[in-house]
Image (cartoon, rainbow, N blue to C red; front, side, top):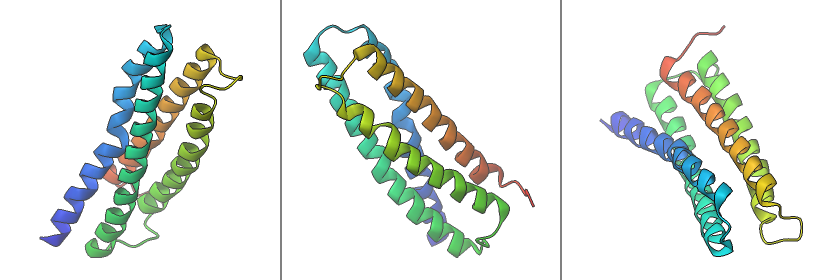
Length: 145
């Protein structure tokens, strides 16, 4: 019973780790065309909040994943688990280096709206791909070695 609850929480946290990015894509489209600085400021604030949600959901995701692995009797060296951790570490490094430095340029002399949004769009897609790869490892559980 406890294993099922842990896996359920793990799945919900996985949804919260990737879901906000699909909401951000249409918002980024609106950011591209807005000329209203206050609207752009609100979009950037929403974007930052979404990143925080994703980050905290990731903490729950990792914790429940480790608990599920332990309670489920999975070996840490199982190929799909090793690959999930490799992609997870890559996604954490990417999340830390892709969004915050870009968002920090907002309202600075270096800010260029077109370049800013292009960087965010590119980063969102890269992060989505990383999370989908990780999701595939967790769902398909492929034996790679």
